[in-house]
Amino acid sequence: MRISVIGAAKSGIAAAELAQRQGHDVFVSESRSSDSASEVHSRLASAGIVAEFGGHSDEVYRADLIIVSPGVVPSHPVRIEADRRGIELIGELEYASRHLTNPIIAITGTNGKTTTTALTAYILQQSGRPAVAAGNIGTPLCSLVGTITPDTVIVAECSSYQLDTIKTFRPQVSMILNITPDHLAYHGTFSNYVEAKWKIASNQQSDDIVILNADDPAVAPAASAVRSSVRFFSTTREVEGAFIRGGEIVLRDQQHNEEILMSLRRLGLPGVHNAANSMASTLAARAFEVRNENIRDSLMTFSGVEHRLEGVRIIKGVRYVNDSKATNVNATWYALSSYDRPIVWIAGGRGDSNNYAELDELVSANVKSIVCIGEEADAIFSHWCTTKRCVKAETMEDAIRIASDMALADDVVLFSPACKSFDMFANYEERGRAFKRLVATL
Image (cartoon, rainbow, N blue to C red; front, side, top):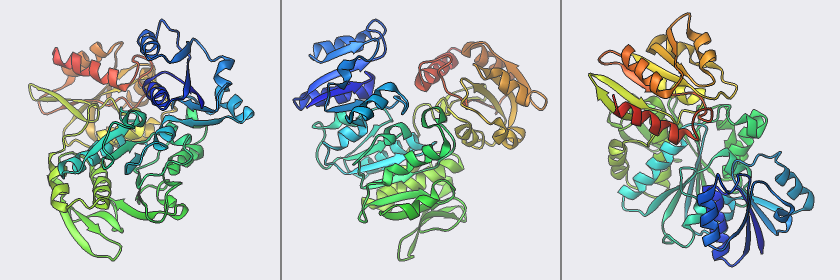
């Protein structure tokens, strides 16, 4: 086959290299110039993969299959033209799944999917089961083809972008944690976004399992639209699956038999949202017959992932926390609800139709002052300046210095932006590392 790969970021390179290993004629097309993507240019050239930079020529369409990177929007000219010409177009996730026979646990959700992916893989690993966390968490599935043992469980974090281009992708266990408005610039409408998330279970059959958040009005209805066996988790009511009763996580099977797993106080991660993530991971692990004691030990010892409520330093009694992965208002809602001490909140970046009113109650109760940064600094300042002490900062360094001056012993300096990173940084990882690097200099 002749395969064109659109986009030469991590997933595009992995797809191109896999296609080449399989003997296909591969052509990579990247919108960035070769100068701005010099490392990628060198890597592809050394591998003997033909590539173009600086735009997409008609050479792209001399293909039997086009693989697009996750960020290529549905309205992109390449996608429109491929459809017009009848060329099959898929994403890296779909392409990898066609060449993998490993059991897959696929996890999606607006918030919490990285933590839950890492936690699920951790539980399996701690129980002695070979497992790897991959997908949107950082390791493209294409790079796993031919490099892991057949019994290794792939725990795949799946973004709505990746799910939008699947056709046959079928995980043995799928999971939808929550759905709140996000990435609307890509999907156009919230209903399109919901539809993309629901696709994670679209190819499952009756012997597969889907794990759903019973508390989320955009998630729970998926139960009636899937063919797979449904398990629920809930922090507010008793369900078939996992729920909370009297401060303890309770498991209930399809025959309504119940077991108490553990007390919420023993969870390694704080916050009610992490209780939900822990229950979802528990149900996935149970699907692979992991024993309760292994699950319990893992939930107690798991310390979280980088950039998600990540403790950085404690200085003179002030706790500094990096939550750079909070790229939307809903993610920051969870962060602001996770601490029982006063918060000096650093927020801002590039907005995505942010509705800050959703945070009013939490800010009123938990936040003592706000440092506003990035393109949304004025909007955040204007929203809360009459009720909270608000200060605008030009740079991350200024924001940390101002927050440090505001904070007293037992306070939390919480960097939870509620915004995308692209106004000041390449991605949330770069933003989070900048925060940690600057905190280290205090």
